[in-house]
Image (cartoon, rainbow, N blue to C red; front, side, top):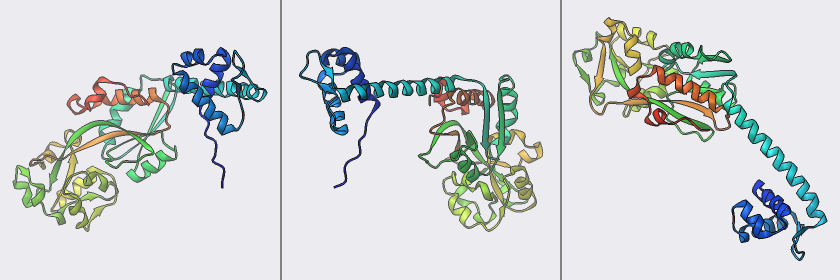
Length: 314
């Protein structure tokens, strides 16, 4: 039979060191804020796992064995190193010096980055770089630590990434002035002709957030191979059909183009834009600086309620 591998914890080492310092189970348990029986059983379990006797319980006060003295010496070093790592992490979280590399999708970047660069100019020791990229590339580079953060609308769960919802925005239809749909004030998504839907091929995930639009995409045979919404709108203007716009894009449209924007009938589709970091990312202060900047850019009514009240804790 294969021997079961040992699983030693820092907590067990803390109990061992406490007992060595107190030389009394009850006093050591009080220092560790646990019961005496818990302390005794955890140390006994460690002795079984390592197949050594750490303390001679027959002695009064309790004394470490020779093997126990060697282990306790190593335990103190391990705990010291662990505390060092913890302090390094805390300092890293609090430090406001260094580089931030953000990946952002084209359906988000134009509304955030111009003003975010202006906001970040007050932090002279932080170098901000943003790259507009396709969603799949962003996810890949975030996981391999080639970028620090991502800002995008990404409704899928991923156990390697931490998602921090930033804001919610409505989605609208943008209809070609030559299309028969242009005569309606509001558009019913269920009656829209799917063969006249125009989408950004590499940002299909954006459109997939709209309930019912998934079937539209599968019947579409024309895509625009870019992430540029402005170019997509010009294509819609020249052809029959429609596309989908995020709410924050409307203010930057020309007045003539705003006439082509139509609300959807109830239920009005929305999307959530989030900030993503790897779960091992420790620069907590950087995350909160970026979020604070975004909160100055996005209308308050759209900001996720939790971010209005609390800082992010990693």
